[in-house]
Image (cartoon, rainbow, N blue to C red; front, top):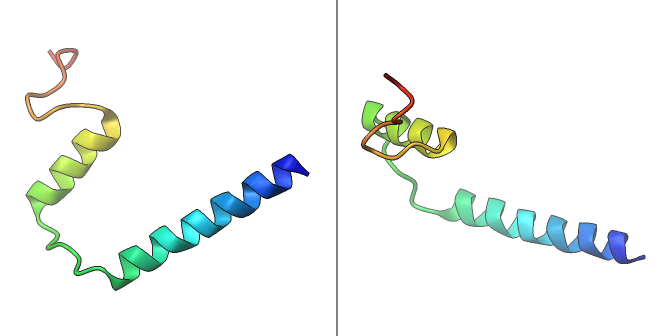
Length: 53
C-alpha cells in the first residue's frame, strides 16, 4: 500500500510540473542554451570539466 501511495504522489507531482512547464513563459533556445543544458546534464560547470584535457 505504501508503494502505491508513493507512486500516486509522484504522479501528481509530475503532472503539476508538466502543467507548470506548459503554462510557463518559456525560454529562447539558442546555442548557448544548449551548451548550458549539456553542461548541467553532464555535471560540468561553465569552466569545463578538468577531465577534458
